[in-house]
Amino acid sequence: MKKFNVLIVGGGSTWTPGLLKSLANRKTQFPINRLVMLDTNAERQSVIGEYAKVLFKEEYPELDFHYTTDKEEAYRDDLDFVFCQIRTGGYAMREQDEKIPLSLGLIGQETCGPGGFSYGMRSIKDMAEIVENVRAKTDKAWILNYTNPAAIVAIAIQKLFPEDKRILNICDQPENLLRSYGRLLGGMSPRDFEPKYYGLNHFGWFTHLYDKDGKDYLPELEQMILSGGFRPADYEQRDKSWLETYAMVEQMVRDFPGYLPNTYLQYYLYPDKVLKKLNPEFTRANEVMAGREKRVFEECQRVAEAGTSQDSNVVANDAHGEFIIIVAESIAYNQGQTFIVILENNGIIENLPNDAMVEVPAALTIHGPKPFAVGKIPTFHKGLIEGQNAYEQLTVEAYLENSYEKALQALTLNRTVVSAQQARQVLDALIEANGDLFPELKKAERELE
Ligand code: G6P
Ligand code: MN
Image (cartoon, rainbow, N blue to C red):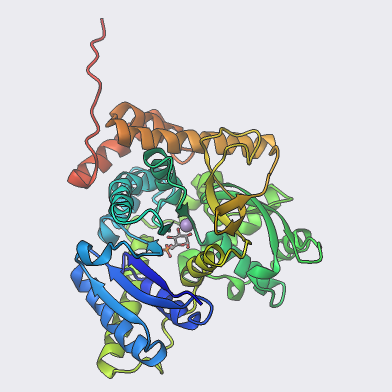
């Protein structure tokens, strides 16, 4: 069995220990020769790197493992897979992305609304640089990309590298939802389903959830959710803000029956209601810094000092870690398994623009994703998606053309903003807060007569 060379970009992420644990768990299915972690933040990276050494000594002794901040060491011509999960600006900037809109009475969220716009402006440059660094060494390596806001990053990467057929943008939220549905149905796994799903990243709907015999579980799940059956224990994510998020699924199903929504739709469909629940003083970034980040880094330090990870239960086998590996396996071994991924539309959804980056099921093969035709989608979803797609496209155009006007148009189009005046206010505040992390956004010099 071929052994793969894998690079993780963003090795200092709070998600990395879970990913490493999943790599160890799946070493027979996805054997690795050389694993390198790269991060720009040496301190975060070394805490997780030292944890990894202990974990791998016990569970993966044959693995050639390194962590580094040196790009020369990381980008090599023998890479097979590059897993990207970077966060430009770190949690400090995520906090700004959330708090600045909230201070103006707008939704403050990492990937949705003005926060997502801001994060997108920061992410594109670094993500494009990663692709260039990989491609300077090899055309063969698959780049699997989690970097958020995935919807915007995917459009930018598609525009910058249109001929590159070995970049795949992915998100684990549909997978998280499949895990939750499986629990709710009493122990089915995501792979037991053949899901039908369409939309954009963090903006889509399940329309059917078939099992292998063709039975559709979606109507049953809908009934369970409506009768209060979606219990917190069924959720994949369990922090307080996530409990509130999952709880909103019931209202979405009640108002728009027949579909199971991606949880992120709450921000677009009920901005007024969700806004009341968001605390401008303590946002999700604060919850993560006080929770997951603290837990993960303390645990990694403890394991490194103890010299054993056998008694460690903080690092879970979460969907984030497992999903990217099984996606890689399906490509590497030409398994053709079906996963929900982000692809250039090109007719997959008949009544949406070709250049939209849509999130749909596809069979993943050694030749890349083979999407299933979706056909025409209903006017309600089409209208919502077109607006959101226009917002995302304008965001990327604003970045590529250094255009303040397009940025303003983008934010005005976003359903969580709507008012052009508020769009301008939040844009100006985000430009100020981001400084050099943003591209220059120039105002067109046009004299009015
Ligand atoms: C889901 C989404 C990701 C998001 C993640 C964590 O997995 O798909 O895009 O980054 O949740 O969000 P959190 O608020 O827990 O950091
Ligand atoms: Mn996501």
